[in-house]
Length: 401
Image (cartoon, rainbow, N blue to C red; front, side, top):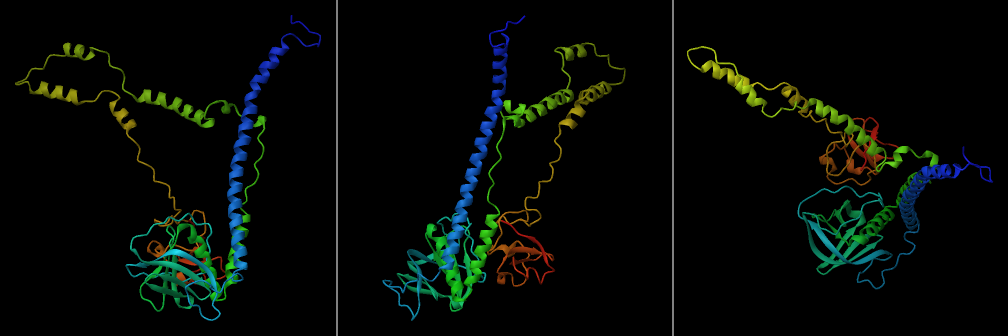
């Protein structure tokens, strides 16, 4: 009989309490680890969301105040027209030209602050011909190089393209046959492209369209703000948490336990040593005949006949035909840009070679929206507009990157 102390508890209670406390400790450890992991993931997502939110709002403020801090170009070795204002200037910019003839998309007012980092490299087919000071005014883009001056007037621009992987901007104008542009330092390319878009919009009196686009990006980004995770409690712990690897380890162990008996069942039975010798010693005498040919044929037939279970084992061990790989593009044609119909980011400035892989509609580059596919299968840049796919039987789906 258990003894009772002065507190009224039995002598076995302390030991039972210690075991019970030790047995439940793993649940508290699991809850602590889960909460730390959830908070760490949340903080990383919150920081990334905050960085993009700050960048979008900075661009929105810069677009709203664009032109108010423009200078008269004092100190620049550039003769300005009366009333011409300077928005931006940067030295050490290289002039590049294309070795082949290309048709660039028409200039648009798209801003894409979420592009990946650019690498200072020169693509194939692009050569550097000069270097100097680049100046953006309210009327033109100018490069003051060692070999002379190169002007791109906004009113004469017919094509404009920004390389998605390199800090290169290519421009086509009416009064020049060869396609040329600028190769900038990688850390200054994003600011240059945004300022060029604003300067072009200001020249054609469409700065409000850029502001509306930034407001739309900010509203979309607000919907993606990460939520604070729920707190994990010890009661939510499962017994699989005690196993290293958790449920995955348990699942692998269960699969191995089911696979081993199946492999053993399909394998050949063991052969005892000396059984072949004993069979050869007790072989039946050859039947009578004119020659030993029948005996040889019987021996060859018996040698070529497989043992019991060999055919079924080979059939069972032969690999099944591989299943068809899952369509990672959700029906989109294979392309080197990663464009698909699954989901991701909207494409407002597609690659200049997109029409080589997709069926582009008429006047494709004249669109000012994001990339969509219409019901007749054609691609247009009318996403987000009231007249989306108006000439192609209506909207079908969005193209994502």
